[in-house]
Image (cartoon, rainbow, N blue to C red; front, side, top):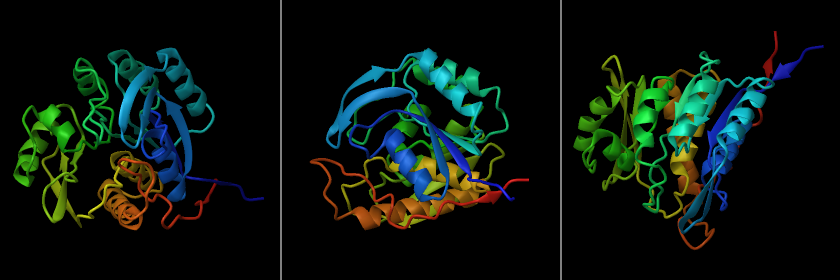
Length: 277
């Protein structure tokens, strides 16, 4: 009898009480794109659609044990890392994942929430650069995060083009600098590679306040398409299309009093079966 497995994605990320971002958005995205989602909780932010109220830590040992118990049982085809907010947590995750070097990692360096709330301790950034950047196949900073990493304010497309090469020298393999905060009709994101190559992605801006969790969703979507076997540039393009459609089809929905979530299940893909050898 033939047996099958689903493409699997592990998300290592923080919680979102309102269900629109963090580990909840990741699981929704991975599931909607036909993959099997496993998860490791790194932090417990208290938040809703109006913003983050406080953040509670998950013990580092608990994070380590979560990662190990999942990877010992369900080896993922890709890993997405989101909120990592203390140096000790960075070391814990990096040390645990070093035992699995062949699994591609998509790292969304969550530093600033949509509300403007800083989610990361300043001393953590250097540790992230040293430990997680070299391990990740791709990092996906938005413009606010790029401003922190490049050490100057990133506001325009020209700024993105200047910031990208600065960030790629910080130990990264690939950087997708997202232009979702550009004040233009067309939004441009650029993929920078350590070999000097660049690829541009463009989309129309959708006027909507329902963009809570868009960064989490994009990185999880990229990881899902990588898990399904697409090369990185193609995975990014398909993920960008998915996020655009998720925002477009959810722009008129009212969930909460603040920034609402995307419509993750606007066109779900049936769980993909790969025959086991």
